[in-house]
Image (cartoon, rainbow, N blue to C red; front, top):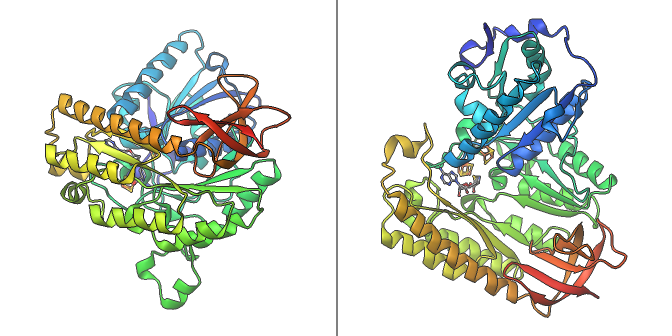
Length: 477
Ligand code: SAH
Ligand code: SF4
Ligand code: F3S
């Protein structure tokens, strides 16, 4: 089978364009499955929008689909194994449905490129995160019986003009991408390779998307980027360091963007993810304090509590700097919820360095944390420069210690909510009981309360009367 390929090495050949004529037929069904971070889920909503525009409909049953897309994550090895397993499962469906097309999208597509088509023959289409506008062409190529790939990364693409189709929606919370890519080059991380250079999206398009969501009944917007604190819109996509004083004065910073979104409506909550400690300035914290509807919650990944490890990770801050940022949050936003990401067993991590992570956790007492064993990723700085030399059983023992500490801290933090009254946005019927509803307070802790006449999207004040390790339970007041 001949393969039609667009990738970095064949830029400009645009082989795929010639098939644009459209073998596209209306009414075909796509099944779209997403893995990884919220940005990937937001991207799937862009993909859905592009294809629905071309006459496709979505289905939740892959067995009846004409086309299956798996939007993938490459962050850790086990994320990739899970996807690979799914792709093998889907390939089996081809035995009974000969016309079925399978496409792999997102970060793993970007990382593995042709390997999917050539070595494994697992899929018909390989599409990187900046190439979704090309999907109609690529599908046409695949429908013509050829393999299709576009893994070009872009310096400009932000899909700013595409209105996402809200897929997995509870109708209350929506995610809005404000930037793409990452320029940080943390030594453990594959994202700069799979998502390309950092670029910010025009603020007016962000506000427009958030306003439309509000008008459609949504009550919470989460602004997404790998490092939202370095968001900067200067019109021409220029970086901070290359701007003149005048251009700087006319640029939109992340704090200003937060304000623009907060001003849409007081009933629209604003959240964001993810902050980077090295770029987390007080301006953002003051802006959060200024508006009641900007949620008092900061996710501030620390990765390690030891400065030498942080340096090897190329994170751009020390333990002291990080703790200073935590102090700033506590000072400016005294009741804020704080969470983190932590990696155990990074290259060369000693027992003492691991203890430093535990002691930092004791200092901060996070509400919540995402904790991972280090997983070496091909091409990253760490893979090239350092040995992945902490044995698996030690990584796993350290992870257990960190998870145990976090469990304790979550419990302590949750208990502090007892007797308090929180304003909660009603999001869902509780998983435990049909008579109860659930939602989150501003600090991002899940609260459960009696249903009464409440419906999704309402705000309610809840007096907390009891709790589990991570959930607050109360009554409406
Ligand atoms: N941009 C965000 C994080 C994105 S990835 C930030 O800089 O904070 C989400 C988390 O996955 C990271 O914070 C890190 O804790 C974890 N992670 C990334 N690469 C990893 C790897 N190679 N092994 C284990 N965990 C990793
Ligand atoms: Fe990865 Fe670091 Fe960028 Fe986060 S900031 S996506 S960890 S390179
Ligand atoms: Fe995964 Fe890509 Fe997100 S690697 S974490 S899906 S940016």
